[in-house]
Length: 101
Image 1 (cartoon, rainbow, N blue to C red):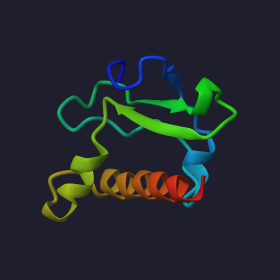
Image 2 (image 1 turned 135 degrees about the vertical axis):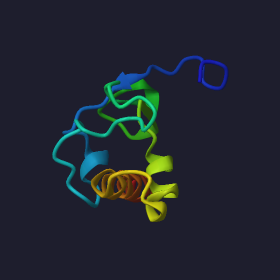
Image 3 (image 1 turned 180 degrees about the vertical axis):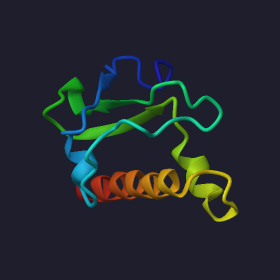
């Protein structure tokens, strides 16, 4: 990101951020882990317009989780159903937020 956007500040996101309530109301950020390293805590970060957290979120960074893998392999039963369902909720919220902000 520093190569593409050197002046960008990466801020932690909390569950109260509007991106987590744009379609589904996500109650907690706990529990979504990376499939290969379930002991690692998932972290949600973002880059906001003009480095101002009060402005529009422009980039979401999901660290220590793999929302794409949970969705990609949801039909193969590789991962618990609740994690796949949560991944779809996160992805839907990201798309809806992006289309409405």
